[in-house]
Amino acid sequence: MNYWLVKSEPFKYSWDDFVSQGIGTWDGVRNYQARNNLAAMKLDDLVLFYHSNEGVEVVGIAKIVKEAYTDPTTDDTRWVVVDLAPVEKLPKSVTLKAIKADERLQDVSLVRQSRLSVQQLKKEEFDLIVSKGYEN
DNA sequence: GCCAACGTTGGC
DNA sequence: GCCAACGTTGGC
Image (cartoon, rainbow, N blue to C red):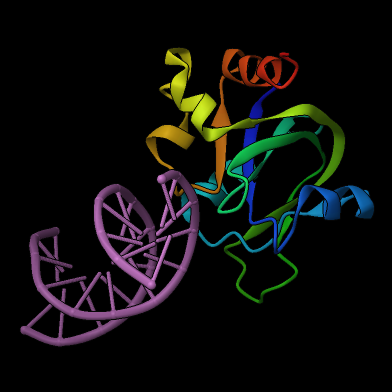
């Protein structure tokens, strides 16, 4: 089981859009590192859903319902997509600020390599961020 | 809206 | 294969 984090700009594709659709194809990735992460995702891996630009926070948990396949939105065969389904919304979203403030989360890519749109997390990091979503 | 960080492209 | 120029992302 692996743990991931994906970013989306809420005005393009928000958590609420995702929930109302019930399933979301994660297309549009045009970065090799992000692509490699998509390709490594396995069925039922858990994924944190992060809002970039607006909100700048982790809002919910999703899971992989279909492993990587060729991106149907382009003829370029280098790119892949996965399908995700919502698992649950965090009672309280976890802001980037809160993540940066936690010394145990200094190695996560959000902090180290903020531009990467599909990132892998360690189980401890994933659990820690989720637990913050349940605090207070 | 600005700018830093980073990825990609293309000339040599 | 290097590197400058350029484009994009994303936090602030």
